[in-house]
Image 1 (tube, helix red, strand yellow):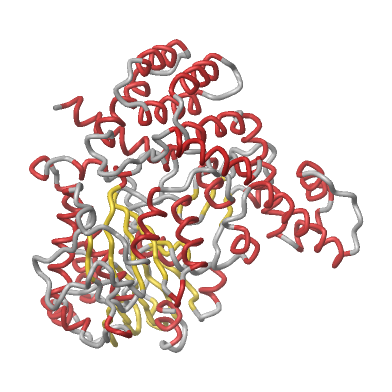
Image 2 (cartoon, rainbow, N blue to C red):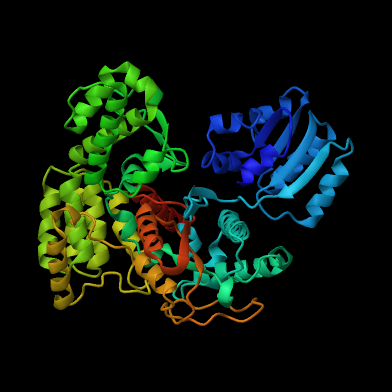
Length: 566
């Protein structure tokens, strides 16, 4: 909405000028063809070295959408001294300090600037209830603040500014709650509360929501649940990210065997793809059925009658009918992607590995689990990534047990590098029991384990891969019901104005932000909660990034780098 309002208000031929971050922010919600429909004839990258050498285009009006960074203000000042465009319409994605506006006004000697506005669009919107800040490396924020470098300070500030923009774009002045056991969430809560106070005037128009209930912004720490990012996934969006890695809704398919050129880079966006929107949370079994229906619907409209029973036959159908590819790029894209997911599941032995992962995460039986993990490590059905993943889950579950060292020796025996095996100890330092404030593996007693086993039998075998429910799902449910313990998730009070809501108050809306990165499995659980929430209550989930297992391990390994030099 912001973007449409921005370009539609300005008449005539336009050039849209973005920086590296706003290119990503825009691409999440707008395709290139969408932009062209709004009389935008050219898109330029403000950060490109070539930008300063571009020819003058006095017949074009320039629309700038930039983050309010020092670098961008300096470049804008230079640009305005020697303007290349007819008019300048400048939009910033966040709050701009008054002194900066005065400096810009001084540089506008040619009076080409028509408007300067703040549009609060400073996060990467993945869907209407999920956002990211695209900060993949935040593990070092968990160290003592005295050890932070300028990089840690900058990503901390970027997180604060991103959350400020979220509050403004959602038009909510929230009460902030943080995780008592996490010093990092407390620091973030304090800094954000201060920013809300500094920008109080912007919130004056935002009326208190009905019945006086205040929205909540809850800050949680990834270290409270290191299990979720390690698990294999079985719903469409989460599988795509886990097995093929999504970056700003884009997937690089160039390494897929026999891929056609037009599918080497694809976009998977709920805003631009109705089939993806409908099937984002579909489990892999249902997805195959839905894809088959999708192809059959297309066959009806085009009167082709090739018999299609399996994913392989669908892929052959797509390859044999070039006109099908042309007419239905979207169907063809999904068929190819699901075919590749099936290949990866088979090639990497993910069904066997995932079943054991779920057992470790959801039930208590150390001798059986040790035996099963050791057998799988010695077998040849799974990849080294799966071997490492199983040992990491086992180590988190049975931390302190002597059997962990036997499994680590077996990993080395499987030719897994020592730096990767070191991740087992690193993970326990990063998110072991001494850090976590919750009992992450709640099936401790024999009674609860038996109940879980009975529930699984009733649910049937298709759910054996999705038994695990994220820790965040329980936190979110308690928050919506006014049951979240204040001793575990206190309110930030140091810079507050006004009263604090009571713990029992049911917030009309909430934002839950995971510093250290959220996951698509958590997004699935939040979407489910929103679907069943009473009285229009809803939660938006955000994270410094959206992790898959590889990005999570890469981030945790950053701590090792520092330790190695220290």
